[in-house]
Image (cartoon, rainbow, N blue to C red; front, side, top):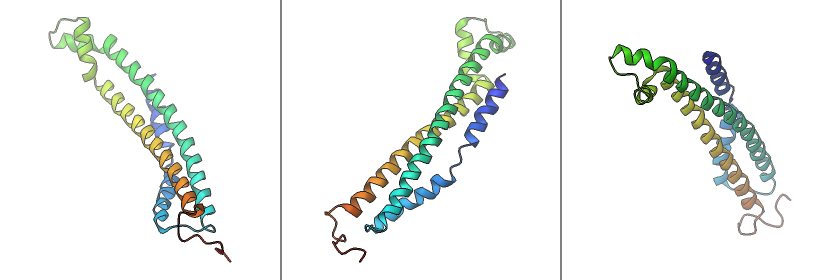
Length: 159
């Protein structure tokens, strides 16, 4: 049971194709070049698409993270209920609830599940930050291109 859960979690992480997110991230560097009202709509559209794409990836990452959390709890239970007794017996330690609790973090399956959970949580945080970054990029392009506070915008632009 737990192996199929781990496989699903790994597949969930691998299904997060970051190629387009990376492409859109590279466009953020273009903001420093400034924008005019002819070029801005293209970048505004790109950042809206990037935001939408990142949002979809974030939803998948959250789902995978929740699966990883459930998997970690399951593996911890198995370590406590099934694996601890043998480990404690081999070492001549009295089998108590406290001894079992102390065993759980060193169980190899628990350590593997914790690593998987850490990777899924990191992906969720990364995508949340990317979402925020694309939102800011969209707003910055809009301000630069359409605000009267910038000198390069004239009433004759594009003519």
